[in-house]
Image (cartoon, rainbow, N blue to C red; front, side, top):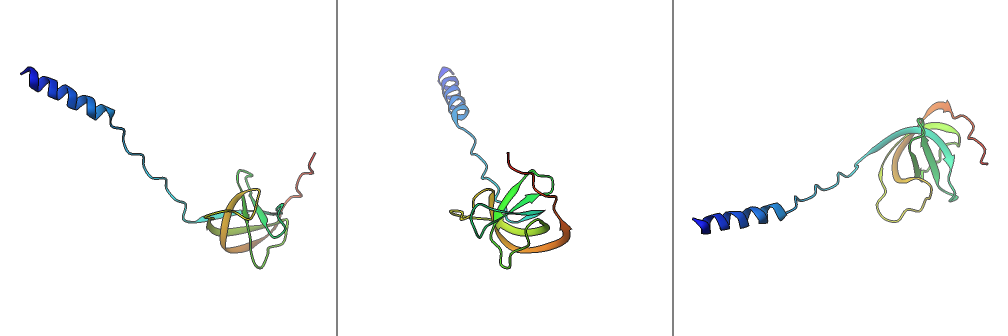
Length: 109
């Protein structure tokens, strides 16, 4: 009887020590965002600041959208080293103009 109790306690202790396997992170397969096109620090790169100002994406596009216009982009998270600086790197699959202009960016202080 004592032997069974000891085996049961050891088994419970081992089970308590096992950590649950972490869930794999969900990969973002597609990003769709609307915002203002701004110039990025790197010469060929552009930034898209979402209309609510909460997110900035960096991307390359050919043809390039006009600066200070509102566009909608569709893309995927960039894998590997990013060429552009200043935002979340995206590989843009498509972009469309919205026929709106952005408010002038605030001057840097």
